[in-house]
Image (cartoon, rainbow over all chains, first blue to last red):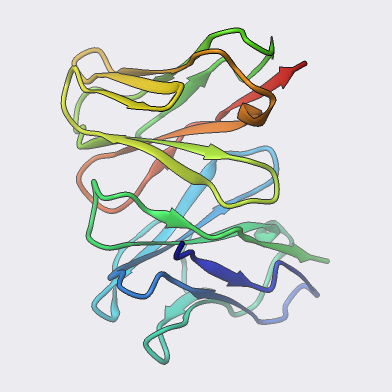
Length: 114
Length: 111
């Protein structure tokens, strides 16, 4: 069964460093998303991406964050200068078409900023 | 600001029990309601997407109902099994691509 895959599963980084979280969405999907869950809190929307551009973003998604689909298969989330409060589980998701179509989620990358 | 709430926060039931959880959401600006099942160390798995008031969906022993006028959805599990142990998340959308999640209900089914 097709699935969304994310790498790495766990990343530890020093505060101020740049990190890139990688995702391979399901191949025929057109909409891509990043969400995150800080420990003990709700899963929060970060950004949606369609047709090589951001279609919607949350207040969390500030200038420190960027997304890219560099090669037609990978979908990446870059955090330029990580802060302690960026520590969270980051989920990638994809869907064939926009809502209310089901979004398929990856297993997540746990980012720990020290 | 949209606020999606779920109750209870956690639930322990015995194998064979039937159970249900609630998701409440703002009834204005409603487009769709999603239910996900999330086991530890796995991907959240989509269970249902519902859009119409009065929608009822079923998948095996799990079913869900939707009331958009009063802003709630129920998820029912009939004859709970240990493998049903997971966190059940609901998420609301208002027409964009953004899912607004509730806090989840953590279900533990004991033998």
